[in-house]
Image (tube, rainbow, N blue to C red; front, side, top):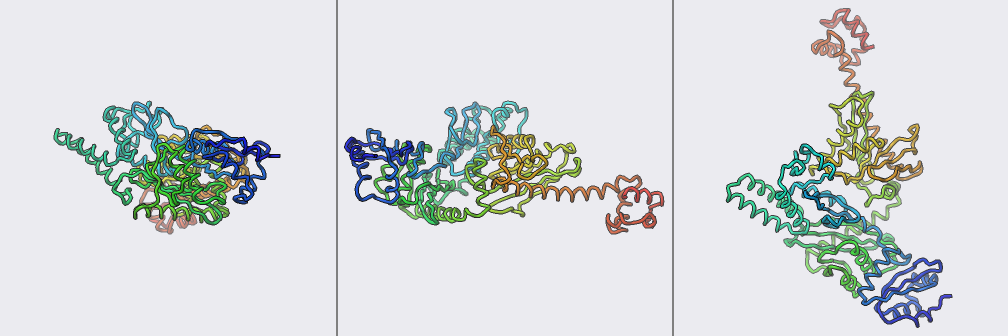
Length: 597
């Protein structure tokens, strides 16, 4: 039996961390204490603080402690242990490691890239960003302004001519010597300033360079600097919140409802609102909002550097202040102090409430499928927009590709697109896939099109590899790609999911909710492609069947179609009927009739 009195007598008054363990050694709870003896003793009084703690204490078989030098050290250790051990009765935030970053590589000509996961020490990382969409938007913005390369090193090192991104003025083409190393390094430094939240200084430096170039009568470079300043000012004008300061803030709002607790994190960097992200912690329903917020701050900022200020919608308790003071660098912790900050917080609270309402409807079948798809493909977020591609032809004839869109909770018919493909070898599905993806996503690479969260390719490893090559060439290699290979006998449920990275192929089975959603989208892409192909094939065949007949030129073809009211009437005509058309002899009429039948 667990003897709490003996345990309490052995404890020290020093600060530290305690771990409550079950009989099987599982960690039930991790907590910190200014005085280990007083804090642990508080659990074993007659009046148990809450039913949750009472239930936990019934399972406790052992308590382990670790003494620290200060309460701040205890707080840091507590959050490290919570994240590593995931105790059953602690508030747990499990998805904050998936935040994306922007990376500038340590190469001679630095590469601008999307990055998620462990960071390369030779590279410079900027972030975190609330979602991958914010990263892609920022990368496209930086491409337009600073013309930095985004291609991977194997592509960069083996290019012999500039790529499409250079042609659309999104890259300065250092791969083929279109820009000197010093000039490129200058653009990299300006991009760093911008990413560090100092866009005003970037404008100032570009203005100085423009004036110097004008004084030296170098009007060509002066014009380039002027255009760069205008692009940057247009971006700032569009993206700045209602503040003239280049602020770095995180806005944190805790809301509860519908049986859930939600923490909404909105990010403001350099005065630009980058968007927000919602978190649904485990085991949070029985904790106060202030305790949930303290747990989030302690766990989230272990992995992500905190900004200068945290704006919160809870009272500034001693626990919250202690958690903030334990962070490095130490942020200022505030409730709203002016109208602008109240507006930021109101927006964060509203988004948290909307997220709670959405979570309450997760029982719908579509939402269940999306959640299953997110989990199956290990996506950081539920995909808000999925695009699927298929190619249809008959022995290489009348090749048509389709792109269908699934967004929100349904297929978006108004956003479907068909592509008539030309200039490829008949029957070359790889070339067809390359052409349609290039045509679709070169606009996205130019910052003009809508970017999906997931791309499905109706095909196996070959088609998927082509799709990956196109994305790499366009600088969009971070878009998730999944190939849907047909199973044996094209049997539904036997499909295999293939990936462009090192992940092994997946066969989910006919009962998988994720596969059911993928099948629905894939089948729609297939239907849409076949309908387009059949229409194009019919039109092509109708015209070519007449064009291939010797002696039938444009004038006679026009008279025949006009006489019989189109191709259907012409096919139904007899030889005698055809002879009635001006310029059609019996011999030619017999040839036409024979060819059409």
